[in-house]
Image (cartoon, rainbow, N blue to C red; front, side):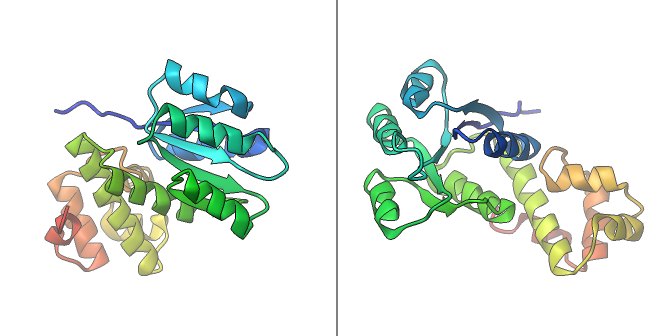
Amino acid sequence: MASEQRLHVLVVDPDEGTSLQLKNFLADDGYKVTTLADPTQAAEELKRSRFQLVILDVSPTHPRQIEALAALRAADRDLCIIATTCVPSVEMAVTTMKHQAFHYLQKPLDEDELRSVLEEAIREKGLRVDLETRLNNEVGSRIRGLRQERGLTLKQLANRTGLSVSLISQIELGKSAASMSTLHKLATALQVRMSWFFETV
């Protein structure tokens, strides 16, 4: 079995509440997370540890953030940086794009939107090198999306399949690999062919 290689994310945000929220959300989705309150230390932290993604607050209330963005970009031209702000503006959006930020998101962050942006970054940057992890995440994401599209709660899907809520949740988050038997039950309950989970993966 291939070992799981978790992507390492650096969250740079002076707001403690936002940092904690992001850390919990990202950890639940299987990422390794480091948080940093002082943006002036971001480039040094990048030199000390290996990060694939950075989520950087660039709110105008924190003027050193753009300097941090420039320093991060200077330290690693290929680093994937997602900028966030509590006060969006066209000027700031243009500035972040000049520094090749992958995306510019408004706070408070919508978890589904952030998850979608992260998945897009992983695809476009080719960050996921572990096939097993990538497959588990993709299958889980498809199950979650189809369940929500069908208007089913985790409990309702559990009732239909005879599987536990916990197991389905773990599969949706990509933390557990579903057996063929489990996938067959989920496919039947969601009214799709089993092969649908793997198309274009």
